[in-house]
Every structure is written in structure tokens, then in C-alpha cells.
Length: 78
Image (cartoon, helix red, strand yellow):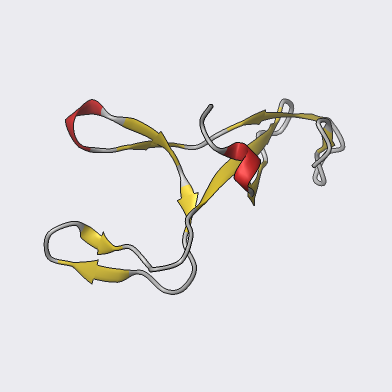
């Protein structure tokens, strides 16, 4: 994945970042993509699929604010 992106809306530069998910007890994690439709879970709210979860990275346009997201392993927290 290229390190510099150009906004498809206004052609300005985009910066890499991530969308923050707030979990219980003040825990903050990177968003993840899961295959299939979400299923309700009585205990957890949403049942996780058996497949692999893929971290989501987001690029934000510094001019217009447009967001572009990609689900790729290299976006995992380091």
C-alpha cells in the first residue's frame, strides 16, 4: 500500500490514521473488519465470526476531511 495518498474528491494529500473503538473499562482498540453479516450475541453484543478479523486503517484528507478505509494486516496496532 502506498504511503502517500491523494484524495479522490479534492486531490489534496491524505494522512494515515485509524478509527478508534472504545471497549469496556476504558480500553481503546483499532477497528477490525469481519466477514459476513453481524449476528447478535446475548453476552457480547455481537457474535464474532469464525474467520480472521482484519484491522482497518483509515486515510483522511487534510483539506476536505474525506475518509478512505482499508482492511489490511499491516494496520494492526504495533
